[in-house]
Image 1 (cartoon, one colour):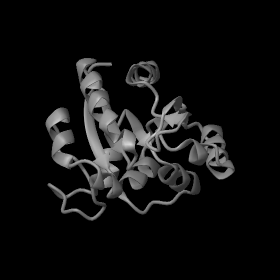
Image 2 (cartoon, rainbow, N blue to C red):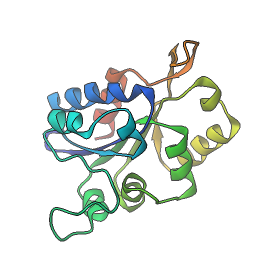
Image 3 (cartoon, rainbow, N blue to C red):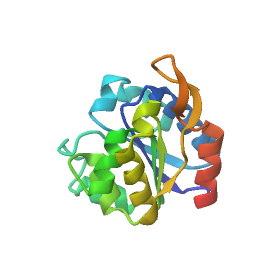
Length: 178
């Protein structure tokens, strides 16, 4: 497992703060973690936080100026042993299920041959929506892995299903896949 490269896709869920602990725990296990943020995620947390924790540049925009001459989404995808999306919003799940590649993260997912592990985190009503559930089933039928959300206190204050899986469960599943 040591030396394995993980792309951690971070989307705009209130559970974004748990991505910090995921990075820390994966690094403790010897994994290299590179964070790719969606534009919306940057509204909730600054990239410098993830850069400090991961020790790597945080990738953000599809058209950011590359460090060298390479097609960034292809080179990142090619170097990944696993693409982990935590937290994963209904939006990113829908985009992946539809093959939409309109940001760096979705382009990496489509370009990568690595396994993809998706960890949803959203309000219960959104998670249980028939369209979201159909998108999850579609992705599972295509070989995408999921760690479903757990029941807990949601951002709305309501208790329900939609909280990001426990960090320990995510790390355990990453180790199992790799």
